[in-house]
Length: 368
Image (tube, one colour):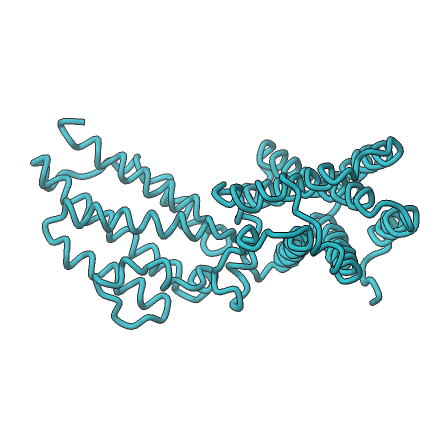
């Protein structure tokens, strides 16, 4: 279909597509993919560079968490590149020369484009990743029979089977959070890695995830969140509830309140204490919780309520009931959170606030 984009990114996009589709016509497909993957890593490298620069000079830090997603995307593209190298795609000198110099020019251009408009930079990457999906889809469809007779490369088997244990593996699959059809499931292709056909299907699906991530980065109404971000929040709430259960005097009542609050947020009626073990399954979409009116305040009440119960339990053990935490410990964090509102809301800010409260509690204990 027609490419809808400003000319400032459409022209370099067509130039890059010319090299990939015309120059490599009739040549080794793996060399073509080596060129594609060498260049495809550069957007995420440039995004991390510019986000780091903007944080350093104090422009903003609201996008700090997305650096983790971009690194996971780059890490994924890096392993695509290793797979193409294992298939001999980097053997011709002219291919390496063209790929490396094109990637360098691409990186510089993307950094300059980001300074002009981050949206244009993300749009360019979305266009390139869409082209990659089409390229791999065509290759898989045209060579399915041949690919199914060839074994997967060792690099592909290692990445898609052993590599899934790496916490970064699923971070780039933001569609597992934003797309209701995925139901929070992180795709793990290694369970069916039997042939080279399976390898290229997995790579094509990876590129599709990158497209959806770039699309969400372009949409200001969509929170771009990795699966690990939801896990961090749920783990924190579960730890607070567990500590409350062990140390709190009225632990069961408080724990029930926390679990019921979570049940109300996710539309699950009366989860109760028994439902806490299935908390991760019950929370279907953290985005909707944070975007709904009052969702943030209710979520804060849940977390702060759990921490308050934990504080009472610790004070009871230490014999320091009635003592107050120094306002300086949490004042700045609360002020920042209140001043930012929904637009300035960051999960890391909540986590730092929780840490500050816990540190303040521990200072009251005579044995610490």
